[in-house]
Image (cartoon, rainbow over all chains, first blue to last red):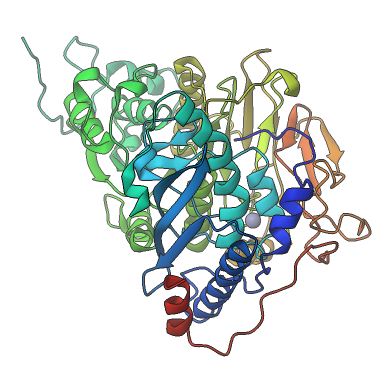
Length: 175
Length: 370
Ligand SMILES: [Zn+2]
């Protein structure tokens, strides 16, 4: 169980990030056969909007797609550091308890390379993320997990992994 | 040289070197437990076979439990060797398989069933439900589920399953800073479920500002995990064999050797609809056969909502019953507070999603081709 540190995490930049992501309405997980398609639709719309806004703000940083049922997601994310682009595969499942609990985002290529990860390359989220998610069920969706979970994680971890030589720039990110 | 023993049909109280049950059956002679050999009828499901779960499984195996069902999807790694139970030469094996081998060797009388999968995934949840419902020695519901997982998602999954099946279970946990832990008995409808309130934390008397989490996710100590596993199995034995008092919630603060105890009432506005249904059933039952909760000194804790300065959810609606309005004993706090169920979104910097005219397939295609 995680303890939180009282501090203001909703600074201006996260507020701005959030403002570009539409909030969701339907409280339904993959077990709710009737309502899940509605929720899934909202997830798509919210993500499409977020990616559009990222592009418009010249801050495009990930692509995602899902299986037909919307239960398994995969794609890639990238981060620029010292003018070089570092790109990673993302994958995650929609848990049975979604959207009460957030999806656990994983970057399998970095598994074992940083202590800020759980098994299977699941990123270790800040102490603020879970309370924030819990307080905004069911309004937060996948796009919010990306923006408030993975975004800040990459911004802290990638520079540190590059500086310590644990990850190296690879040409593959150019292709 | 290796010694392996054969199965034993009947638990004997005879005190001889070759009887693995003599000291346990002595509990009966001493009048502590009425019918110790009943333990062989019981089935316990253990979810999570890590630092707490593996030790829990070993204790129950040595006690001669009838059947264990183990769930985990992790492999044994060298990084686990600061904890008890697993051996370095088991690295690479799945935890459930490694555990099965060790446990079966310790006590071949125990029936052991293992499942190497992640219970939080859609594809596995039905099997998980089914094994709780039909996993006992007589193909009925298991007698207890023990949660020995290390994350919120898995706990919520167990909670969801047990609320749906009306299954009694124990939640257990060790904090990420390794110096506190807890166990909690959950009887759906009768006590608070895991979703009735935000996660509870035992005050560790550590100054928040000195707790550094940079660079690591979690710490762990074999001591704290051993203590929690001990509490968990002790209360499991008391519950199954009906002796002593079973604790509803028992916390442990390692730095001060402090053990808060309390009972949490279910939340009538719990988010889990099965919890509400179980509460209704419980309230409709005649009350005389209900064990009186041991009441520790309780104080009312009503959390002000704005501890993080998060303004996404309305904080000002204090007239509404807050969902985190629970009675906690001293030394236990909530990991965070929740807004009242009826609170309205205020100061949200974004709007809601529009109803899309497009089909699911079109939207999926659009997202993919961006
Ligand atoms: Zn509940």
